[in-house]
Length: 245
Image (tube, rainbow, N blue to C red; front, side, top):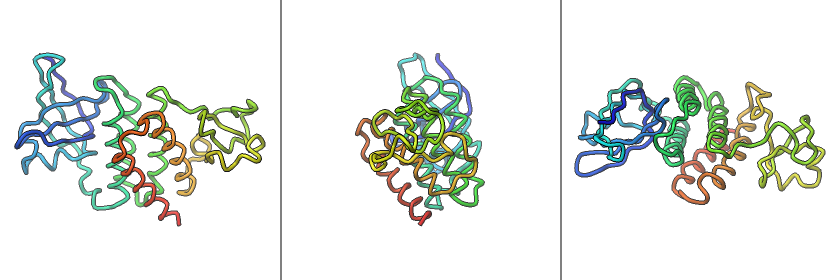
């Protein structure tokens, strides 16, 4: 019997049958895993199977091909954060995109660590400004881990590694301010924090960073699919934009 016991971040829960649920959760060593939770829609388990929660997950299956049976015990709840629209929107988006994009049973320890850190930051921050940059960095890491990393270290036109101010929508490479003259409206503005040059970016800079990661997530990872999922992100970005204004 195949088995797994590990801490896991709840990423998606779907009703299955009259009382059960199919859980998709991210673990550090096994990556994204799925399992059937008997009674997953019960009043006892619903508060545990909330996206963003950290659980003690146990999976058991007779074969690798069979959907495992799952049990879950709560380790840390993010449910109180769902009363705050910005935090709720961020958790909804980041867990949903993780569940949708990652292939199952492939380890992504860096993503697990980054997602854990992001959720912790949302939990302790007094405002969105304190966690929104971590969201943009998580999306940047998601692109890199799946083979679509952006080249933000040097200008794709000149090879220079200074004065980098934009990103090409086509290549995903950085563009210097000098090389961008006359083409600024065709490019995406590159805020310094995405290159690690600003530890405390403004919320306006974070929104610019999310415009970059969102463009490439839509094009390269979702490929125009999952319109409902992108609508979740659009609502989040709209709320962040209103916070900037």
